[in-house]
Image (tube, rainbow, N blue to C red; front, side, top):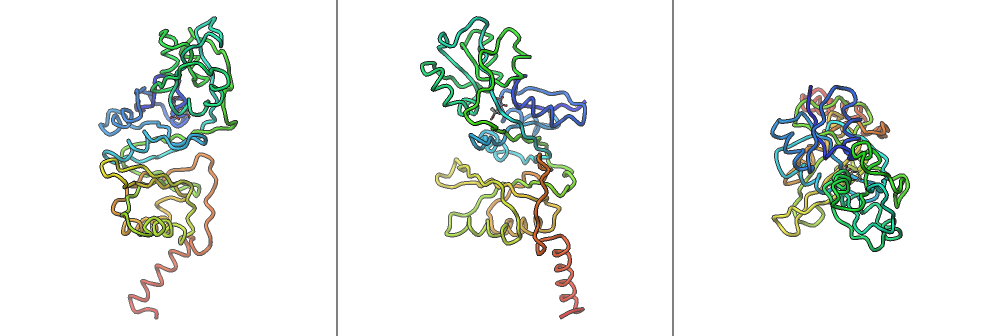
Length: 307
Ligand SMILES: O=C(O)C(=O)C[C@]1(C(=O)O)C=C[C@@H](O)C=C1
């Protein structure tokens, strides 16, 4: 049975998302303490794939994931999942709100309940945990009074109880997760795909605008752009781009060819079906047919068949 790593321990949102991402096949889920450790297990070949959080509608990108995707051997995303996010406040039985002195969770979770904490636990010390479930484990071990956790965590920590449920500063918050593997056969195009890549451009006038123009000229819808520092070179960045379409689509292949020429580094991070299955809207001049017909025309001109 294939093994799939995820940000653990059991009871995280990532575990829930990874279960839905691997719902089509039998898999053994392997918890890892951090996203970089989960991705390292994939790179070593210890596991087939890893489920990782990549972006939250409230708090933005999960930087640990973006960095770990690009700072070592290439990996590619093959599937994505969206999960609605609301939190529970878990405590040891009998703990009242007024008695809570310490509260712990994953920093991304804490950021999504900042207002709730300010209103309801203004004097509690807030401590970062490696995941929401690690926060629950800390409460079970008596190391913290309360944890901001995923509702599923209670199943794994039956010694705890839910003091407050449905906590969220922003209703309808969503986190996007990816199933990531070593490079290999890509998922087939579905007409409702997303392509992710990371590009490093030179620090010169107009290079970012030029890079984005390569997408817009081909009618490609950019859904996300994010920059992360290169770390070893102050003031230089890598850009993470998500856009509609599959690398097998003619307009995407054409845009990637142009980006490869323009950027000092391009890393392909995958083409995979979008979780919401919303089809890409493609204008007629960027359709497969238009690209094929125009490539054929150039071939005919070059061969002397047309002028
Ligand atoms: O700690 C967890 O439960 C996670 O799965 C991580 C994570 C994240 O990195 O954003 C996932 C979803 C929520 O947005 C909060 C935390």
